[in-house]
Length: 165
Image (cartoon, rainbow, N blue to C red):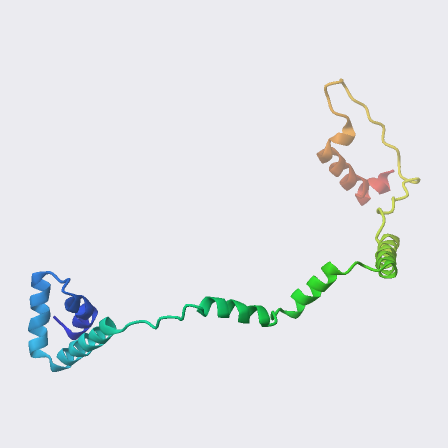
């Protein structure tokens, strides 16, 4: 057994909870290593002192006196909690409410006035009219056929066709 392994098993060894082979390995190491032996003796003396230690008994009136002192002590709250508590207990004065309402309405009016409106419609008065002809009721009209419209735009801007017209 190595010193590191003994350090991990020292308390279990002192409690007597090691198996016989493990206990034999620990005792063998303690016989050969003075530093580990001293460490285990230190653990043993500390555990003995802790076993003898008795807690301090509180006086019979301790709880009563503590509760009375806590009631006398001012409650320490954060500034935000105090502000919130004060606002919740005090009614809002009518002028303060009117000012707050007026401010909200003014901000709303400014936002509505300066918000962007719907996009401007393009003037199509000079554009050529397209007649939609459907061969049968099952076929969609030409304006629903997007690839055809894209081809029409390309052909309309084609310079050679404009010269021919």
